[in-house]
View (cartoon, rainbow, N blue to C red):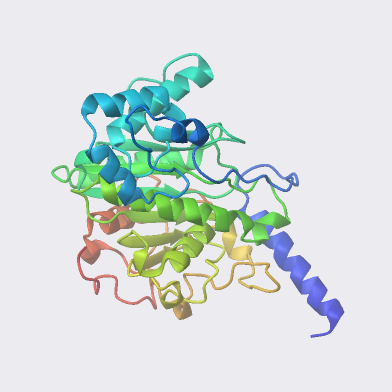
Length: 366
């Protein structure tokens, strides 16, 4: 391809991707500063010798190691650590769920001068940068089915309508459809998302940082939700890039039973098989979702590659025929919400397959 044509094609791809994946305003965002590394307060935590032994290093200790450490403490010892180190304990994957809730309620109080609303369950709360968090709906410690929502652009501590709405909608549908199955949903705004509309949406810089945090979060869930099947991870818009990179990097260790791409610009992998995960891979895109304008290319580090609803990708594609727009996949009464609920519950025979998809019911129950 001549250089001029290549440049024009690349520019078109970048701008179309930026326009189509944005959920916020039409202004070009800055080069977003990534919040990464161990939870805040880690240095203070490492210096704590109150137990007469080193505490697990938040930067290096695996969630399994963290879980084993807390299992060896008395209830009073754990509560005391959460009181002294709320920022660390509240964001420490592998720490007990209820202890993290208590720690993050304290952090919320410190940040805003008032306690969180009654009933709010914050599994993570990091005020650095634009802020990240994870909020739980339902009773996570006793859940048998769990879904994690990974959102895309312009989501942070102050602006997060799509993931929290989806998590609430999903829990309501799960409860109505299977009232005897304990379920919980999680809005995971746990990474630095792209801001506004800009070429950064066409790169995986933020996705790579987010993928590391997602992999660790899911591993932590596996240590603290022993009654649950492996979670269903629902990845929307740029969030599907995060999930694709996370699954690819973790491979067989990716701690999910089902991986669902919704309104995706691509996953940075050419096929479901290339993700290398044991999770069942699903995808859907509404007919009127403007993400369809995104060129599914990957060139010189820009663009996110194959559309996961393309038959060549190899995902199980389900219908979203009556979904409106880019963020309506959990609208009440929609086929998408019905299908998502069936996937989360492991009732794959109830999923409505799209034409040319592998049989959705041809999936072993989780």
